[in-house]
Amino acid sequence: MEQASTIQERLFQIIKNSLPPNISFVHDLSELLQISYDSAYRRIRGEKEISIEELHLVCLHYKISADSLFNLRSNHVVFDSLAIGEDGLDIEKWLQSLLAAIKIIHAAKEREIIYAAKDIPVFYYFEFPEIAAFKTYFWNKALIPSGNYQDKKLSLDTPARLYETGRLLLANYVKIPTIEIWSEETISSVLRQIEYCFISGFFSRRDDVFILCDVLSSWLDHAQSQAEQGFQYMIGGAAEGIDGSYKLYHNEVLVSDNTILVKADGRKTSYNTYNVINQLITSNPVFCDQIENSLKNLMQKSTMISGTSAKERYRFFNILHEKVNALRTRIERMD
Image (tube, rainbow, N blue to C red; front, side):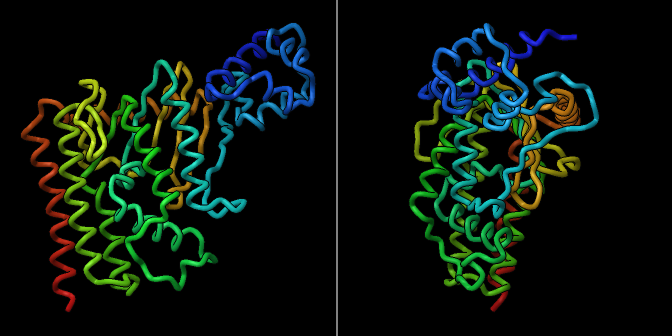
């Protein structure tokens, strides 16, 4: 059986790796356990074993699952839920939670994100304020039935603070080595949502539908440029980055959900989407290994269209542009 001191050492190392640089671990731990700095240091150095009650508090506070800590090999997996509408969590707080997580990933020495994208990756909605405004409206409509959006008309004005949080989220994401797996349906979800909102009379201005089509076309041009360059960068910024740090795969049939696997300094975390954008999150090593194997299998059955695969890349993005143009045509005929 593994020694308690080894488990305690692993626990504190996981926490140190996850804390932002401006947070003092000793101070944080002493506040949490209501002990002196000296007592906190002795626990961190392994000179004093933490109690079961302290272990429980630490795991809850730092969101560390016991099965991950003890390397338990079982079919029982503990997930954290990041769900809009639960415990008063709104869109802005949801984005702030994602921002805190991605800053930790960005700060890691070794990091990678693998994103199987049934829908447009959430980070990209903040390339344009118009798309961010639409998605914010739709998320509130779909996920918070009792909110103040039920009788509200859709406009393309995004709350400044929310958009700023989203831009910071995107700015961190584009600096992390990333593999994305798309299908021809990746853009279909947002197009269906736009059409649904138009038919339902939610738009305050008819022309806003066409503005959304325009910015989606511009975003596709940018996404194609990223794939061609082999690195990510924000629209309006310099087209520069590390060659090969962004890989885009096209899968014809198998991207059935939004699944994100994060690898940061030897630790894996899986983000599994449910109910539009809510997240089930776990660092369970068995589960994360299964997700990684599944994503690698998906890549093997896909075609890489970033880098030198110009012909396949042009064909793929032309199909996505045609989907946007088809929506524009359908809307124009609804007179």
